[in-house]
Image (tube, one colour):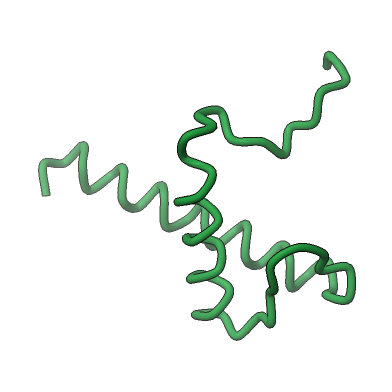
Length: 68
């Protein structure tokens, strides 16, 4: 690992859309995520948001690949 943070968008232009998506998912899950610092949330809360984001992105890609 080069020491760079892995917590960055590979496509910087997508950052805003990813932030909106993260807030959408947090709202769906009932996680009180806010803009900026969220150190008051548990690891489980934060992890559930990230995990659900990945799940939804994989589902969307699978549908795209299946031509749906």
